Image 1 (tube, rainbow, N blue to C red):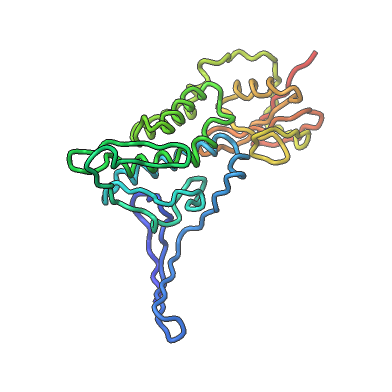
Image 2: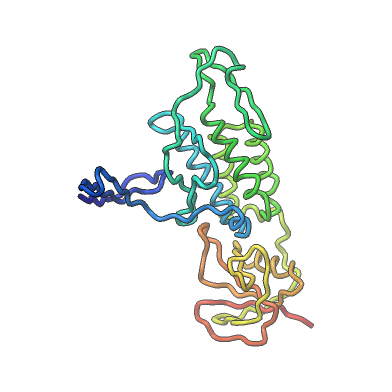
Length: 296
């Protein structure tokens, strides 16, 4: 017997269940096969080579997941096995592969010394409540694991310079468990709003240093150079908030002599731009706009 389920309702932190098959035969008795959405294994080394924007998305989806677990209908849920292999990436966001290693049991206690959390590099002692339970232990365990497995590697590196102080504050606060999941989630949502709205650029110089000639409906097919991190492994393809940010980026690379605005956007709505080291061969393209640095 096979049953295909229609998936509706709120997005859950676990992979969606599309259906299941129950098989009972002489050869294979009492077998249940589940059909879930496909996810990519989490490869940390590969993630470190992606754009900051995509790495931030991973951290943001993780925090949203932990917020859901902290306030789940069952109570606060902790993931006992928090290693990266327990997660997959689905459409750019992090999801739990399964909840077999989850627990809703909050540790009982008679004093604060009973609320001891031990990690390889740090130990913490939480408060024992009047009800005889360690306060927020499940939530804090999840949060510190998120810090040591994800935040320290993915959040600060190659982030926009104006966002670094806030990102460093988030990393430090979670590493010391000064914040709970609610405050951590609120601060990461704040980073997202600053990034999507372009407000993070307000404290930077917005007057172009170099003059550029605008060439509408045009594209430079070659003349690529590599930069890191890039959305294209053979060229320099980055996301920008507006043309002025693209100019700032081009001015910061000595080899950049032109850039091409595409009609493609990232998950935050930012425009993808190819940066070029020359403009010798310009071809017509109705979906792109080329900017060429004026020299001489």
